[in-house]
Each structure stands twice: as C-alpha cells, then as structure tokens.
Length: 179
Picture 1 (cartoon, rainbow, N blue to C red):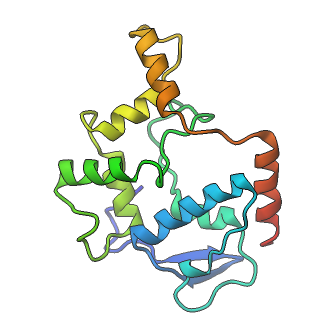
Picture 2: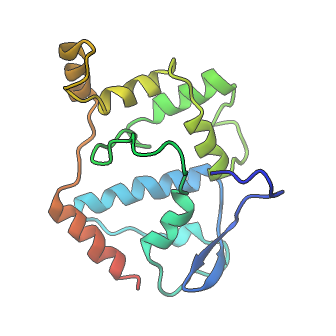
C-alpha cells in the first residue's frame, strides 16, 4: 500500500536488522515474482540482481516478500487464498494491454516505474479490462449464481496450477537455506 504522507517510496529491504539498497523498478520485481514461481518446479533461484551494492549473507524470501508483496488492509477476506489469480509471466500480454488501455502507460517505453506504483496501478484496474475478467474466472466458485457452466468452463481454461503440499514444503526448505 502506498503511503501518501511520505515524499518517497521505499528503496531498501530490511534483512537481519540491516537495510540493503535495492533496485525498485517493476521489471526487476516482476522478474523476482516469476523466479519465485520456479520454486514450484524445484529450481533454485538467484536473488542477487535485486541488490544495488551489497547483498546480505543470509536472505529469507519472507524478508523480500515484505517489499514485493506489501500488505494492504482492505479488502478483508474476499480473496481466494488457495487460487492463483495472476501470473506475471503467463499474463504479461494482459498486464501490458490493461495498463496501456486504462492508464496510457506503455510498459516497454517507461524508463522506470517503482514496483509499489506498479502494484497500485494493478490494484486500480477497472473490471472492464480483460486481465480483471480473466482473474475473475480464476477465482469463480461453483456455488455462485451466475452462468455456472460458462464460468466453470472459463475458470478451467484460465486456471493457474496450484502448489502441492510437497511444493509448499520445498519452498519453506529453500527459504530456510537463506537463514
């Protein structure tokens, strides 16, 4: 969540009680989110490209998530926590067209856009974008009263694979390697 009472946005990550200077451009952190998805496939990821000067010796993914996934107090409890509604790699065309269509921002032409500004733009997308439509299909539940057959079919067509319990355990083990 953006803090409009401050003049600037964060440009460091706190790791082990110390602040480390990071790159804040949306491309860098989108890459990070795509890399994190590789953990599901059992691949290791390199996070050194996030840091400007020095990289912390021990870096837990949860400390990086503090920057990449800032908490927002609202809305409460409406998101389907077990459903992946957005994948930065698979949905890149939809993200591009939504941001260009709604805000007139060409993500290929913008020199630098802070990750938190990018997230605010994404959260502010209106329901008329194809991206929001697809995200709605992905979180559709069968007990909703809409056109059940159509929405169920669209959900299956757009659904992103979920992590298994084993994959979640592997993520935790990988995070612990940085402690």
